[in-house]
Image (tube, rainbow, N blue to C red; front, top):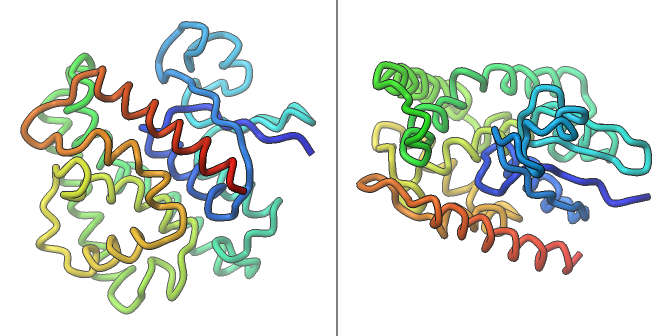
Length: 248
């Protein structure tokens, strides 16, 4: 079977989620660097890429042996879990899967606001994201964290119970990037359950390898990173990824 390709960049939160799933299960893949929003040859708006992923977003999964392609991180993750039999993160019980799917749907316009409203305005000044949008995103994220704090994690170690599932992976790449160890753009003091969960997730296999890009970029709470800093962080992350995959 040929090695699957994953199009994207390590800095992308959804790309990191799929990378983590592969690494957690020691499954080789090839990361094809793809510049989000660019119409250039390696961009997500180039006609060749749009033929694979009509939405023009990253990540996109391609299986060279069959030509099958699939966009959207959550769809990719559930597809990989089903086809590889990764029931540790996506149980074969349909009700358990439905609960995970429920979170994955909830994630958009709630937890996903961590990137859209808190990180993107810092790293993509060119987007000129309005203050009103940033404030709305922060409110949405804060409300989502309250839900996670008081419901998902009230009696559970992880979002769905005692073990990591796709829901945790999707949630962490968004929420975890805000930690003081990384971008440091959110105060978690109101959320002790979330803080405990963040610490537990940081111990999950593959966490450090997948989050090299965040460690390299560092604290952006006071000053936005230069584009060279982001580029270099992606390059370092790619080197780490290649070394990790070579060890499988």
